[in-house]
Image 1 (cartoon, rainbow, N blue to C red):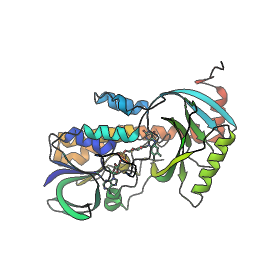
Image 2 (cartoon, rainbow, N blue to C red):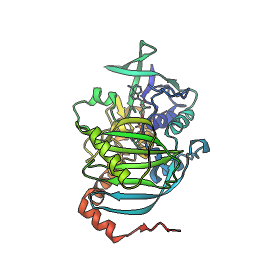
Image 3 (tube, helix red, strand yellow):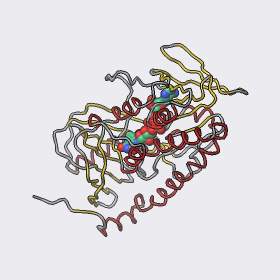
Length: 356
Ligand SMILES: Cc1cc2nc3c(=O)[nH]c(=O)nc-3n(C[C@H](O)[C@H](O)[C@H](O)COP(=O)(O)OP(=O)(O)OC[C@H]3O[C@@H](n4cnc5c(N)ncnc54)[C@H](O)[C@@H]3O)c2cc1C
């Protein structure tokens, strides 16, 4: 009998396992293979930018990141390209540009040895009984069952745990993100954020990463997803960006909690952390800080009172919900075409890139 089974060793699951692993009997189920890095391993599709809020979480954990996770170039600016208003501006931002897979592996490497981690392992389903939860999973084609007192869904935007346990509850808006990687020897030294209602009511991005240019977009799920992505690339090319040799296409779902009602922490048997619970910024899609923060709050609740962890976890995440509320209040300034035009025209906080 485990105390806690965590499904998913992304930033949320790895954080929780690190923080409770020495005190409880913990099993982590992860469908990726973190032992070996090879071309066909399913890596998390991500922009790989650590924003200030996520940097603060690492600081709160007393963690410093190894140099091997960083990639070229490090970025100090965002270039906002507003296709709706034919306008653009540069703003100062301090992101850490990382290799996301290396980041996830590093977080997993910090999990105490006492924790049992199973890789290449697919969570299938669960069954509740009076004394706990029986979890079914598949590894190397064989089905296994393990029993636990608490099941934690840390399995990301399309969480199977959430769908099975709380399928009747509303889900935050679901988008599909597409990213294409192109080889480049250009010297783009900023992060590009693109607003264009013809493409998406969320946003698109350009990120330079270790000799590549990543073009990505979070798109409403409909039949025109690929057409819209092609249109985005055409518009970016027309704007003067050079990208030719495509090396990779990837995709992932992403949630956008435009209200706090679909953000859910779970019940007294099944808890949700990270994007599985709906914890992610609805304005920027920054999710790493929310994943680590919700993992931290659940660990505190479990340690404070195992039997009342669900009530404590819900209380602990109130400030995270406020954070999501406040981000939602900011949405009109970013996503209303007229308001954005006005704000960008004022040039407040923007700067000019010097022409030498
Ligand atoms: C295209 C894109 C770009 C993004 N860019 C950024 C960015 O630059 N900065 C930022 O802060 N955030 C970014 N985000 C958001 C961020 O990636 C997520 O919010 C964050 O990864 C959530 O962490 P998590 O641990 O909750 O989930 P995940 O990172 O999704 O981890 C879930 C884990 O569960 C595993 N899993 C899933 N299902 C199962 C199963 N059935 N059995 C076993 N294991 C399972 C997965 O393999 C994975 O390891 C981006 C998201 C997308 C889609």
